[in-house]
Amino acid sequence: MKKAQDIIISLVGINKSFPMELGGEQQVLFDINFKIKAGEFVAIMGPSGSGKSTCMNIIGALDTPTSGVYELYGKDVTGLTADELAIVRNEHIGFVFQQFNLLPKRSVLDNVMLPLMYRGMPMDERISRARDMLKRVGLEKFESYLPTQLSGGMKQRVAIARALAGDPKLILADEPTGALDSKMGNEILGFFKKLNKELGITIVMITHEFDIAKYADRLIHIRDGKINYDGPIPKNDSKL
Image (cartoon, rainbow, N blue to C red; front, side, top):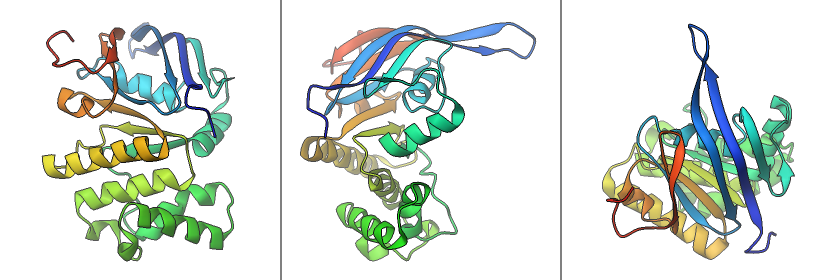
């Protein structure tokens, strides 16, 4: 297990451009630099189109920068192939998405076991691990249910159990409360806080809402593809 002060995410001089249909390129990230230590709970916040989701995709090894260096656990992953990036995602990162991304025709237990199947874990170990994770999120009695039979908050807890199944030290949460009402959203955010404080899991959460970002301990604010704030959660968002 990583020490509390180990740097697990390092972005240095990250730029990202996308080709445009009529030719040329559109740059969406400009010289992004930050480091995240093990055990931090960080919110990356910005308005729609600010570049925060592109930044998350790079952190999550879902995309690569146009230039700059991204190191995860001290390893440069900038130039890895798609297959190599897939291995990095599966072995090191747990994902929680806004729309849950559960398989609707598979049971709750099957959904939680999915990342373990990709690792080639034996079936009995998969089942045991998935059941442990469902118990951790309070859904051990719902393993045979389909996602369509669950509330939004329960679906997100299944997604969290799935993210935890591979024992990641890093969870990336992309607008994790966007599909939930405020009560359910606060419950999920409180659960992230608990995972961070009690288990030491590093959490990087993408949001466009300051009230959501306040659950984190550190805020990285992006506007127009550039970082304009990186520090403790401010008292209000008037300076962002």
